[in-house]
Amino acid sequence: MPLQTGALPWRLTDARKPEVLLVTGRRSGRWMIPKGWPMIGKSLAAAAEREAFEEAGINGTVDPQPLGSIRYVKRNVFGDMEIEILVHPMAVKNELPDWPERGERTRRWFPIKKAGEQVESPELRDLIAILGKRLKQLSI
Image (cartoon, rainbow, N blue to C red; front, side, top):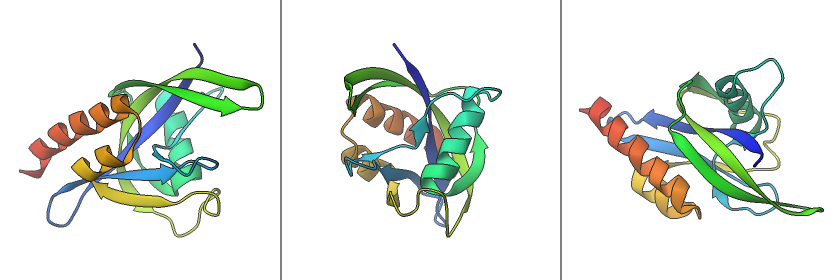
């Protein structure tokens, strides 16, 4: 099964409440995480960081240890292809006003529970909940 890498961007609000950043798919308009193919000469975490910059216009620190993985069906002109995505938590430091895919996607911050309600993938919903539990410990 082909492998992609993705970033699950997060931050703590001024009130120390955890939030997750989601982006819309270019064609589907569905809420998802920034993701893409591995890149030659880059670790999977570094590739996830690059995808987060290109798709969401954010910079930050990507955990080299994946939170887990999800399966995703990618639709293209050749048909449907099932892909595994290794999901890396990403602590967001900066949001840029302009980025490469700005005109093609929407980005939005969601509280953990709301983010889980926005995504279609039950696996991604579970990873968002796991991240939320970890971040709750940081917010105390």
